[in-house]
Amino acid sequence: MLPNPTNNQEILEDYGFILKIHPEQHKNKVWIVCAGYGEWGTSGAAYYLAKNWKYIYKKAKDKPFAIMINVEIGKDESAKIESGIFSIWKDYERDYVM
Image (cartoon, rainbow, N blue to C red; front, top):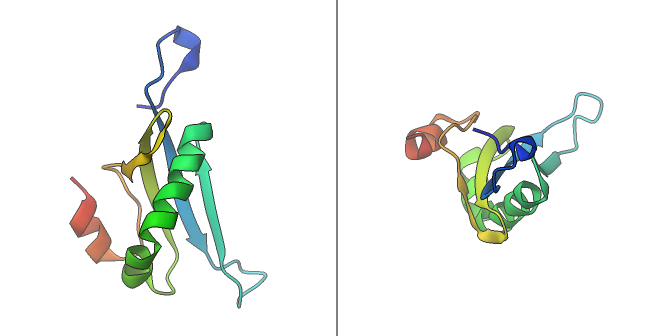
């Protein structure tokens, strides 16, 4: 469940994603996006990509992908794959979907 700041609950976690696409209009280019529901989701996604890019590349190669990330507020190093991930490659899903 995504955090909802309107109900006065303390927000303890955030969500982000890492997306890699090959845009139709630039077939020889690759776009990689790190974004989040909030600022910690964005920075957590970027942190996860920076720390795990070799593994991600090993699995994805040149394929597009999207990875959902969960991160504790204030702790980029807590970034981990959320249980619901969307991926092009089947090995990654088998390894990480719980």
